[in-house]
Amino acid sequence: MKKLILEARINEYAMRDHNRNVPWTSDEIAETAARVREEGASILHFHARTVDGQPLNTFEAYDEIIRKVRAKSDILILPTLGFISNDADARRRIDNVVRLAADPATKPDIAPIDTGSANLESYDRGSGEVSFVDRVYANTTDSLIHYARELKRAGVKPKMVSWSVGFTRRALMLMDIGLIDEPGYMLFHMTDGKTITGHPGTIQGLDAHLTFLPADRRIEWTANVLGGNLLALADTIARRGGHLAMGIGDYPYPELDYPSNEVLIRETVRVIRAAGREPATPEEVRRMLHLSS
Image 1 (cartoon, rainbow, N blue to C red):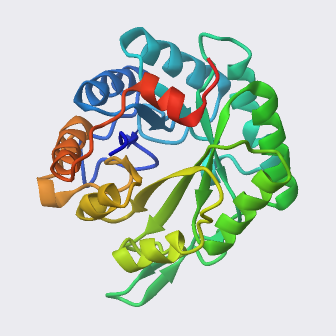
Image 2: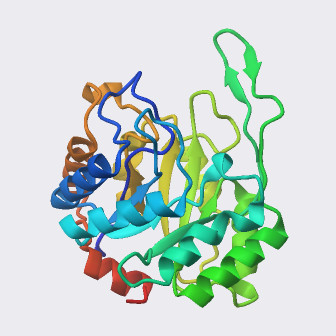
């Protein structure tokens, strides 16, 4: 079976109230990157954070992190565009990545494009409380076209992030019009817990995504679960030929006694090997996704 791309989602916007191992500072991120690479991860996805865990969407923060990561590891770099913390001007979310790409020392290998907009309310089923009722993650089609064009110009591979079937269809549109080249790299971003916008992190939720993935396109698909246990789906995903985007940034994993990222990646590798797959190295991922050097 083909090698499995293992993307480590090490921090996102997670705080340390549930898992104290979430890395925030540039040094913590670089150390985590080296450790998850040793355990089998080939891609690092990260958010720059302040020393107290707040989002830090400056060019200087990402420049520093990437240089420190690359000093310790050959892991591939996939920074955020800023998600909802960098949304004052949606079209400008791409600016940091474009600036970073101008220097070979800091050029990201991959960057995410969430191919649609989403309501991001928080719903507590137990109490019935609904909060953040006016929070919207806006990605207009104009912005998406702009992101894809800029990434293509910069030589950075887009990761098409799909929260639902409509997102997938819009990602395919970007491929149809020549803005994203095959092979595509697509993340099925499922959600559990208090986030209800995405497909649930279940086999049924995954199947709903896969049903609309066209057979005539070369697309390597991966999956994550924001607010839920992706490890429970790892065997299914591995046996279906998919890849995994795993980390304590998405979920604290009480099932594993709130592990570090490297412990979670180690356990994930154990599961995928039992399913007959091996983790891909960064160089193998370069060839699989046709990444530019």
